[in-house]
Each structure stands twice: as structure tokens, then as C-alpha cells.
Image (cartoon, rainbow, N blue to C red; front, top):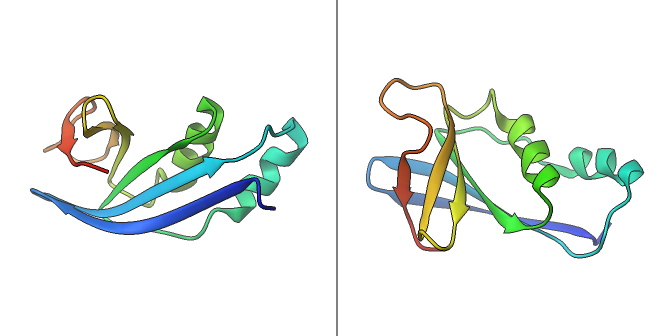
Length: 104
């Protein structure tokens, strides 16, 4: 399935380190293909996951759901802020809305 492509890279930014999951959905996708995309997601875990990509909002949700219990901190990259916004944290030291300064 060439519609959904992704790249995984390591990053370090201040007190944060982990993985960047960058994706692109190259063509429109029908609802019956959603489970196929979910099955393509690799097994990952670490300290911090930053999700960045070109695709619909539901795809961000599928990616986050897959990794929610595998990463203590998950953030979504915002190019306008040139930072990733934390959207899930299991740690007391970081809360939703905190920024990870990073240029992609």
C-alpha cells in the first residue's frame, strides 16, 4: 500500500529525547482501508513520541491510539510554532500544552 508512507527518526531537544513519526497519506482513503493503515504501524516504544505529517485528523488519532501506552509523552508537531505540542503525558513533570522546541 503506497498510499500511507512514514519515516521514523530519533531526536533530542532539551530534556526530551525519543522518536519522530513523520507520515504522509498520499491519496484519499476509504473507511475500509483504515484498518489496513493501522496494521502498517510498526511496534515502537520510548520516552517521547512526536507525530508529524500530512493527512487527515483521524490518522493522527489512530497513530496516537497505537502508541498511547508505549510512550509516557506524545506530542504533535506544529510548523507555525516550530515546536511540538504535548497532547498526552503520563508524567507529572510535563503537561498537555507544554512545548517541545524543535525544528523539523
